[in-house]
Image (cartoon, rainbow, N blue to C red; front, side, top):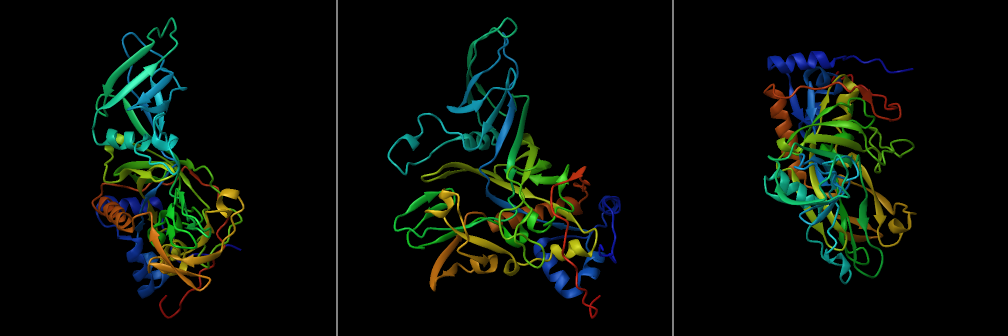
Length: 404
């Protein structure tokens, strides 16, 4: 039997309060203290929206560009942007540039581990910054598209569209990476020292969007979000979206990767403050993406989810020297984000230094910017056209009668 709620709000009611400047909007950090003080029912009654944020390396990112027709017209097939290959198998002058794409002359072809200087993420960041990009393209030529080659400069103002379209962003939770081997290894989780010399992690924990809505009750197709400094949308569930059958904590948050989002947004609205290219030694290129998602407090269960603390969220510690690359990764243990943020975790009695690859500072900044947008009536909430695949919530709220 489904739990009956004492608080029931609608998107329409919350948006009307936003339009009138009456909505109570807080960040996920602030919601923790509010629920502790008031309890979940009173918190749900008082708070209308909780804002979240994350800023981390999201390798599965990229952009669709339409660079405009040439004279004579051309159906671009082999395409390079500042020497980085882009995919042209779409139509005429549409292309897709992936964040991890690397030029043929990249130092990855040199002695391992290699130093990766420039790739697709850098092209995307430079486009957003308004810089000129060299477009070089070749085609086989047709009667309707006779031109066979072109080389010219483009920028975000001269091209028709620049749409960030990332198939897998905002992982719900993620691994803590360690190295149990006797050699240094180079991974997308950074350089890992031998014999458990360090541990790296990548999540905003209690501020992270999908950890504040663990069963995707408010985040779905069409959800309006903060993306890269502008307004974006959830387009679909992301690739590798796997929220079923995962171990969860008492508040419902998964203790592993679980859900992901496919997101889209207009790059012409974005800022390089929230889209940053990264060169990762021995791995390649990635891109840091800023995402913020508003959580409407429709009832006390959602208020309960958004009061989750770092000490309550656990991530799996995975060996990246053997277990992860073999595809047979089993957690060495689970650690909380509260432990990780203290700067070390313990493995087999050894203190292992821990450091984040994501920025909690930027996640907090994103949550606060989104909070101000909503409070100022500049950003309304959108009810999902369809919810994302997820198990039914199985968290029963235990009411504190002294507070409720």
